[in-house]
Length: 112
Ligand SMILES: [Zn+2]
Picture (cartoon, rainbow, N blue to C red):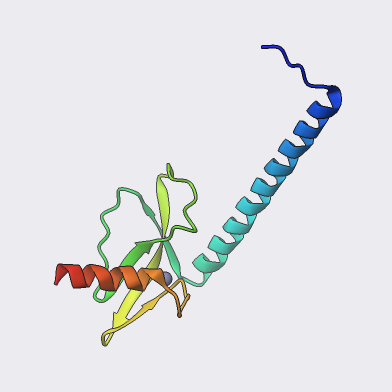
């Protein structure tokens, strides 16, 4: 394959690629920071993808989409969903719009 691009076109392409890589590295770093903070607060647990999840009484683990950006990862991060007196709370702390609680409630309704 012949590369017919001019030198300035190649320079532009290289510069664009560098920017993309830098942005990806920054995104990854931010995600790692977020995970570390959540972990320090005991709000997430890391489990092997094949782990048998045995949740405690009134406690369920839900896989976090936003924390697990690598679909081939051996290990995944999970939020803790707890139920106390019929009241659900999720460790993602998106109180108003927690989709995890919505999933849990929907599953329960289907199962019932
Ligand atoms: Zn949640």
